[in-house]
Image 1: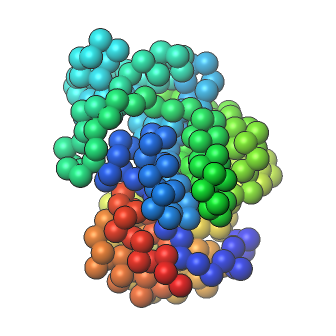
Image 2: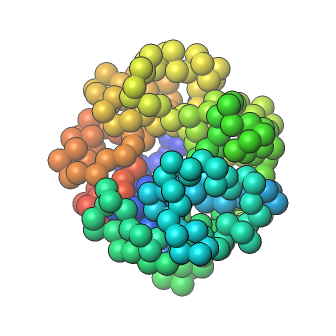
Image 3: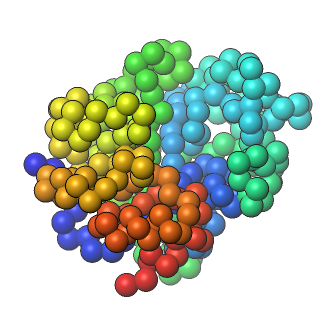
Length: 284
C-alpha cells in the first residue's frame, strides 16, 4: 500500500514548468510567477549536464522551438537532438537563451532572455521568494527525463541520475516537500529501493494506455501519486486510485471547464500551464 498523504485536504494546484502559459518554461521567472499566483506545487523537469549538474529542462537537448545558440541563431529544429545537455558543462548551457523567441503554442507567454537554470538555483530562488512574501512552504514535483535508450547518451543511468537529483533537494533542505515523478519506472524503483525519502509519482501517457492495474504491475509497487494524462480520468479511475491509497494528479489541464469537471470528479490536484486560470481551485 502506498504511504499516501492522507492528511492532505487542500487541492494541489501544480504550476507546469512553472507557468508555461505566461513565462518561458522551466525558468526561475516562471517559477516565481507561479508562486505569485498561489500554486501549492512547482512542477518541473530535470536533466543532467556533462559536469553532473542537475539542470531544469524538459528535453535533454536544446529545443529548436524555443532556444537560441550563444551567437543568437535559433537552434535548428532538425538538428536539435545534437545539442545535448549531457555533452555540455553547465557554463556552456547557460550561454543559450531559451526565452526570447516565445512559444508558438502559448501566445500569452511573455518573451524574455533567460537561460536554463540549475535545480539548486531554482530551489534557492523559490525558497527565498516564499520566505520574503510570507507564503507557506511550496512543494516541488520534479520529473526525471530519462529513457532506457538515452542512458549514457542523453543522461546517466537511472541510479546515478536519481541520486544526483536527490542530493540537490536534500542539500536544499526540501526533500520532505519533493515529489519524484517519471514515465521511466527505473528511476522510481531506484528511489524506493534506495530508501530515498521522496514521494513518488507514476506518470502515464494516454496513448496506448493499458490501464491502472497494468501500469502498477509494470512499476512493481504502489506509488504515492498516480499522474495520468487528464483525458484518462473518469469517476472509475478516481475511485480505483483512491482505493489503493494513492492521490490522483492529472496533467496538463489548461481550460477552466475541464479543471472544474476534474475537481468535481474528486481528483486531488492538477498540473496546469496557466496557474492564473486555476486560482479558483485554491478557494476552500
